[in-house]
Structures are given as C-alpha cells and as structure tokens.
Length: 276
Ligand code: ADP
Image 1 (cartoon, helix red, strand yellow):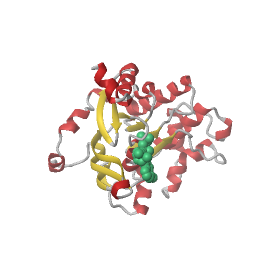
Image 2 (tube, protein in one colour):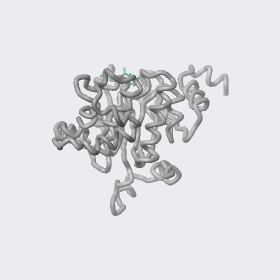
Image 3 (cartoon, helix red, strand yellow):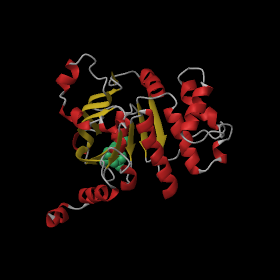
Image 4 (cartoon, protein in one colour):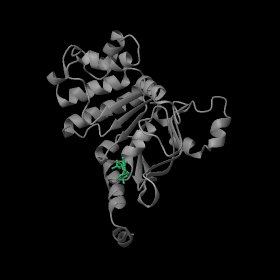
C-alpha cells in the first residue's frame, strides 16, 4: 500500500525556499499552509483563532485534527478549504495559491477540486442519490457523468440505490452518499467535519473504514476534524490544536494514546505538572 511511501516528515523538513526551487514546486502537496493566522476583531478584544499554522499534507494521506473546544479546529478547516480568509499567511490547495482569490474563483475551485463531508450529511432531500452525487459536476457547469456516479456509488458500496431519495436511506447510507459526492470529481482534498458525529458506533466504523479505503485505494487526501479518538485513530497522522497553534502530533497511533494526549491537552497545567 502506498502509505509507507507517503511521509509527512519530508514535508516538515522542506523549507518554503526549497519547496519553491524544485522543477514542479508544489506538486507533492495536497494542502500547504504557511504562517496562517486568523484573528477575529481588533485591539484588546481580538480573538486569535489561528496563531501561525505551518503545515504541508502530502497527497494520499489521511489527517485528523483534534483539540479542545475553542482551539481553532473549525477556523483551521474553514481557512484550509477556502471558506474563510486568513488574516495573514498563505494557503495552497493542490499547488494553487488560494489566498487573495476572488469569491467566484474560490467557489469554482471548491466545486471542482475539493470535497466536503459534514456531520449532518447535507444531502438535498428532493434529489435522488445519483442526482446528489453528480451535483458538484452540475454546479461546476459540467454535464453530469452518470457512469462516474455509478462507479463512485459502487466504490462506497451503494450500487443499486441510485434512484432512491436520501429519506429512504439509513444514516450510514446517507453519509456514504455524501462521501460518494465528495469523491465524484476526484478532488485534491476531501475535508470532513465530524463525519461520524451523527452515527452510531458500528455505522461510524463503516464510514471511517470507507474514508480510509478512499485514501489507500483511490489515492484521496482526507483532512478530518473530530473530537473522537477512535475516529482519529483511522488517520495516518493526528494533529493537536491548542489555543490556535499546532502543539503536537501522533502518527498511526491507537485510540488510547490519542485519548491520553487529548486529556493532557485539556487538563489544567497544575495537573499536568503533578503528573509529570
Ligand atoms: P473549535 O472548532 O476548536 O471549537 P473555533 O475555530 O470554532 O474552535 O474557534 C476558535 C476561537 O475563535 C474561539 O475562541 C472562538 O470563540 C473564536 N471564534 C470563532 N469564530 C468566531 C467569530 N466568527 N467571531 C469571533 N470569534 C470567533
């Protein structure tokens, strides 16, 4: 499996200078954030939601983002996906710098080159499964490709259900449709925001296995915000955010280790010192 080849640590060691000096500078990175800051408000009441994030995620990797409430996870996802604008710093997706892009161009880029999976599935109830899956193509102004829809529905284990409506499916099946929709354009990155938050444990496991499979078998790149260590354990790397900074990471770690790291992050400083 390609996993062994796709190493984050190469990225961490590359400086912005030598990233730029190669023949095809950013081809390796699905996501590249440089000194990304996001501040809400000004002066003494300013909230520093992101305090300078530097991050490169290789294609074909699965990254989980964890952190206490208010640590900046949503802001990170929004800035990385071009849904919010950093106060400073740059974001590149699939080698394209999105910082400063017009809203129209950003919208087009999101539709063609990004996939999104949300906790609440966000399917359109009046459309069939197939129509939901081809929606990104239609929104991007392309003719819906029914063969591609059938292919991606088969990949998520839903062949035969193309004509159903979301209301006729279980929660797990609806999230599979959402994943099929996220994958249909073969995007540079799939951003998932608590994708298992509304599912029972067994169904959540199926959905997480499916995202894993999309990375391993289809070469997808997944960035997933989650508060659940069991979900994060499916990722290649878990990033830990605290107070707007990436303070730690774990690679291929079991849920227990991830949970312990989260506990250390959320525990009051005195408790951490006492435990040390
Ligand atoms: P998380 O997703 O980890 O809970 P957020 O990214 O939602 O964290 O928030 C990070 C910080 O930014 C928090 O202190 C939050 O209150 C603040 N914040 C988020 N959005 C806004 C906003 N629109 N206006 C002001 N402050 C905000």
